[in-house]
Length: 169
Image (tube, rainbow, N blue to C red; front, top):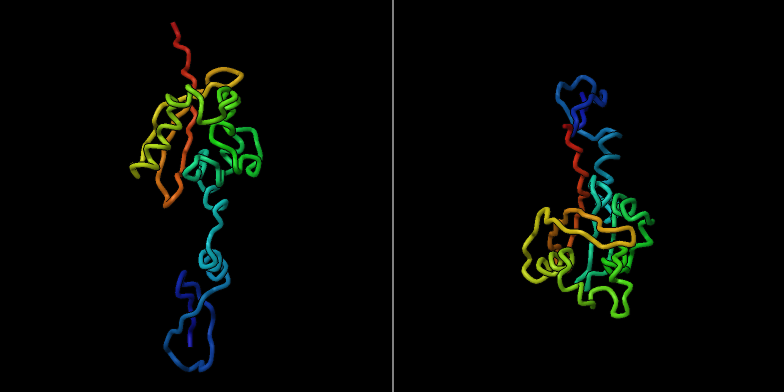
């Protein structure tokens, strides 16, 4: 009896009874390894690292639950260094260091990032590529932010703004 992988159709060889013309199905080692990873589930970090752009998962108090490696690289921090920080603290917003703290200063009321996250938390509405910036010690850093509600958390995606090419005269 001929045996093939029921997933990728690779020939797995013959098995008893050899005089039987029927085809049996099994699973090859490659497919077993591939599907085993899927059946075990993917870690949150593994899932976030699949994105090719910076991603944060925030709780309803805007504290960071998880960040992907792209986000850690963007911030110049290790993935674990951002866990538990408020968004403005992780982004190194100059206003987050004021006495009132991140989210509590007069500047925070007009923070586009914060307002996008809060809007998504309150309405469940996803936002896509909203222009925003953060004031850092080194100056204003522009980027786009997108938000998606995930149960009791919000996925926040950051995209850097590419500097405009100087025009030739």
